[in-house]
Length: 371
Image (cartoon, rainbow, N blue to C red; front, side):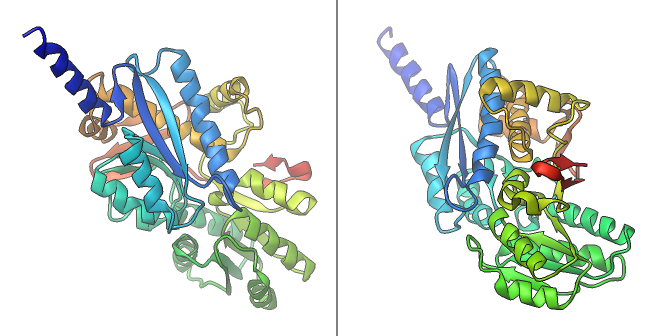
């Protein structure tokens, strides 16, 4: 009997570890873009996640378990996505996933995640195809692209704009933003003025510039990555455009401002997280203090989103209790209605949207952001 007990305990420990949980550790995985033209999106999101995880670990972890983050680079290419998720799930044996980036990659990750029945918290995308139909395993932290584009259209119309064009990436991410703009305009008895597209991970925007500039829009809603958006804005302005340029949050605000330099003044970006440089929102104040301590003092929206995603993950883990399983975690998440310090998230078995928070910002002088 004395020999059997250690063997039983070892087997139980191995069974727990197969889900990424040991008596002193919870292993979590992030598959995102960490190299190539869109790299800053994944890097900054990871910085925000690590900022909060470091704080939690320094304060004893979650129910005595430290959080370990492992990452895989999917290059923001759908063809690379399934293998990245499989490696995290099958080789690294993570308990859950968080901080994924992108619509086309997200759509490719989702079948792997669903088949393995692994929870995924916080996707850096607002596309409807990742929200409807609802997945039991996916919990969003940010508002949808429909929410963002509606806010943008509302702003343009309220300032007298009538001719609204759309520049978008030629994939399901770009289509999600184009469709959201179309819906927002239809609500107001309007139609998209003109459109232009760009291929993912390229800056070949010449055809889009020619088509949209010829139509002389009042405003352009932009749904692409920061490199192509920056090139489009530069070429449009060089061609004499007087349009106001509006980007959805996925663009990566800091990366766009850096890419544009002095040409970024006046470019607008919708945001799905609180202003990272403010001090009135408690969670922002916490983010600033902890980011500086973690060695990431360059505050930005993407890292702020990573920080909030990590807070949601940790809150779910705490509510799931010491006896942690994926089913208990999902049940806890579906009962969550939490104020994270001025940023509210709410889930239920029929709603995994989390938040509808949207704000508008513009790039000011020296690349600084203004509300």
